[in-house]
Structures are given as structure tokens and as C-alpha cells.
Amino acid sequence: DAGVTQSPTHLIKTRGQHVTLRCSPISGHKSVSWYQQVLGQGPQFIFQYYEKEERGRGNFPDRFSARQFPNYSSELNVNALLLGDSALYLCASSFSLLSNYGYTFGSGTRLTVV
Amino acid sequence: LAKTTQPISMDSYEGQEVNITCSHNNIATNDYITWYQQFPSQGPRFIIQGYKTKVTNEVASLFIPADRKSSTLSLPRVSLSDTAVYYCLGHSTLTFGKGTMLLVSP
Image (cartoon, rainbow over all chains, first blue to last red; front, side, top):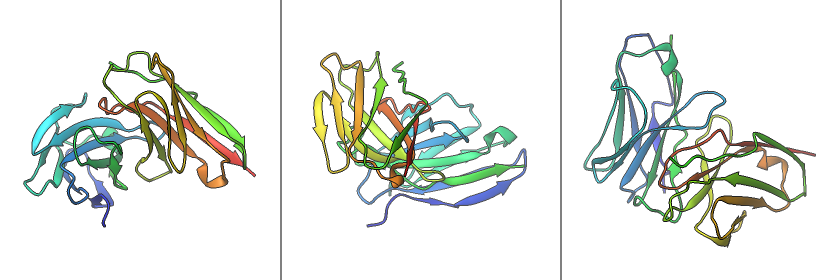
């Protein structure tokens, strides 16, 4: 079984540009969450989706948005990129909102803004 | 808001037992306590989850006292490959702290 897959693995963007990150959850998982992790810090929660509805939002500006598709895959969009948006973006999936096995994370997308 | 507090770092040697304690004074009464392990440039990996008393799986044990204000992750006989950052959090909070950097030496 494939784990959580994220694409792309790395990308470089210029300040002011827009970026779309993609996540495919484990088959059968209906919840997807997005995190931002900067070097030396723990992952910071951005969004959670369950059954295509937003179930939680972290303390991030409106430049960040996300959605979940009928096949439970998800996209994270970031507009007007800033240098400070450079980070590892992680996607995590679980079968439900309360799972006995926590969340399964992907390996992330490394975003560099120059 | 449930906030967790862990030691920033811990050192150990191969073969020793390591106990990492996490303080979570305000955890919700119905929330589970979850621990993750993270290697550099990888996503966190689920280790263990519990609600109260003791939970054990093939890699770790989790001890949670009756007041649930703290929890202790126990790693038996660590190896060099256990060098990583360890995080505790309330499952539904989705909020990671800074974690504990465990360094295992030969």
C-alpha cells in the first residue's frame, strides 16, 4: 500500500508568486491535515479537512487556502509568497478524526522562496 | 489551548532505557495523548497513543497518570537509529510543540 504521497518534493518560487502543493492520502483515509515546519521548530497546523469539509484552521494568514476533493486528495495553495513561507510543508492523513493510530505523514514538500 | 512542555534535548547510550516526559496540564478530558518520532527531512511517524494508565506496543510504552497532566514515553534499549526528535500532543489539538531531541551515542 502506498503511504501519503506529496508532490512536488522540492520547488523554488520567487516572492509574490503563487504555489500549489498536492497530497494523496492513504487509500480509505478521509481526513487530511496540512502543516508547515520551519527549521528547528515543530510542525505548525495549517488546515484539517474531513469528508471534503474544513474542520480546523490554524493561525495562518488568508494567503493560505486549501481544499479536499471527492477522492479525498487535497491541495494547499499559498498566494503572494513571502521569504518566510520557505519551509517543509507536510500532509497527514487518517481514517477518521479520532484514529487509534494517529496520523500518517508524507515526506513533505520543501518550498524555498527567493 | 492545550500546550505541551518537553525537555529540549536528552542524551543516552545504546542499550539504555530512555524515558521522555511531557507535561500537558490543559489537555481535554476526552482527548488522547499521542507521541511521534521525526527524522531530519521526513514527516513525523506515529509511535504510540493512549488515554490513561499504560499502553505498550512493539516499539514503546506510554505511561499516563490518573490526573492525565503528564505522560512518559519509554523506549527500551535504544539504538543509534532512535536518534530523532520526539513530540507529544493531544490528538485532536493537532498542535506540535518543539519536541525533544534525543541523541543516542555508542
